[in-house]
Image 1 (cartoon, one colour):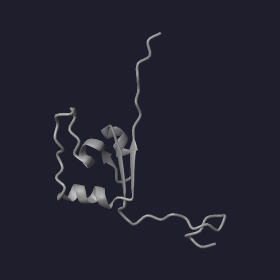
Image 2 (cartoon, helix red, strand yellow):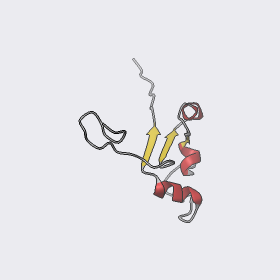
Image 3 (cartoon, rainbow, N blue to C red):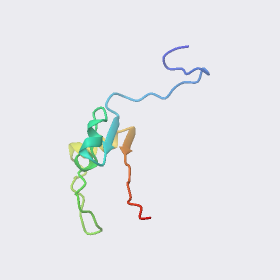
Length: 85
């Protein structure tokens, strides 16, 4: 069995270095992700978003290139709602 094969002898998927982006909705959660950041910072998402808000990232920017080149994007989101009993 090689490093590229799993226990069943199947080829395991591999990702290029830097091809994974990890983001979270809060700064505290982003700190727990290796190489991660907040959704707002990584994807240039403004805090208040509605249909009239234009994108903050141009198609030619370095951030847009990172998004295009990413093979895997992980967004860690946990919505906590208040339950009234």
